[in-house]
Image 1 (cartoon, rainbow, N blue to C red):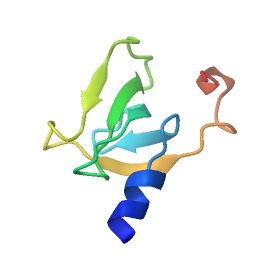
Image 2 (cartoon, one colour):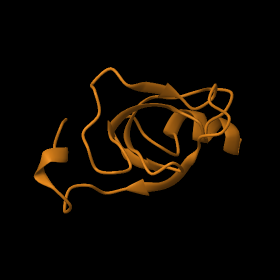
Image 3 (tube, rainbow, N blue to C red):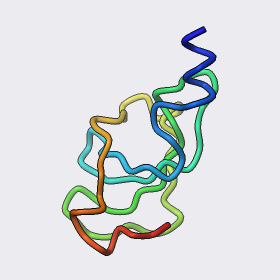
Image 4 (cartoon, rainbow, N blue to C red):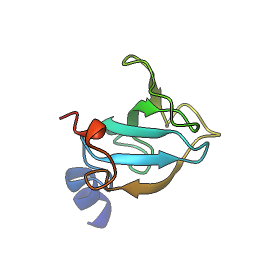
Length: 84
């Protein structure tokens, strides 16, 4: 029951921001039904703070060494992150 609920609601909803274990900040752009903690993300900034290319997409299901370290609330941090 819990797995079905999480597949519908998602731990990391599409449009939310996360920090990956390598320091990059990314926006969730899709989920993975079989591995709900490993969504598809679009990197918005590198670990050093430089903005990333718009087409830098990572499927965390396929990249076994990368994982989400923490969800982020970027609203108070910087108006540059108001992308949606």
